Length: 188
Image (tube, rainbow, N blue to C red):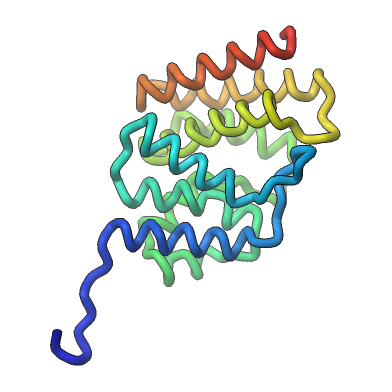
């Protein structure tokens, strides 16, 4: 190859670069479960759900899934995402990012109210995120969450997912099964 020319990165290389970036950004973070599992497990799980269950092969969607919590939960800026991964990735991550400056109740209400206006890619990420989170609330709940809070969380995810319906029947059915499993497990 002539000196000075770079070969464009393959989709797989770009995805792996996003995984490495997210792992670095979330390196000191832990999930709220009793085991305090590494936070990076969550965004990787969301991307894996999309790829394995949803059949998503779109690199932009998978990269944004891996990066979906970087703006919300780390010091990453939109400019850094755009410089590192491009405007399309930045915009998709922004679309699924809650404004942490707002009170939690307001953020949750806005997420539910805005779900139907998301792009299809963002709806896929939101749907996979809710599947992963509901599974965690059932099997590895935050240590300080009582049954009532866990049930309330399930109810809230149902309102968010209602706005995402119509984007992927397989993921939606998986969400429905996980939600039902949670309701049974919690006696809700």
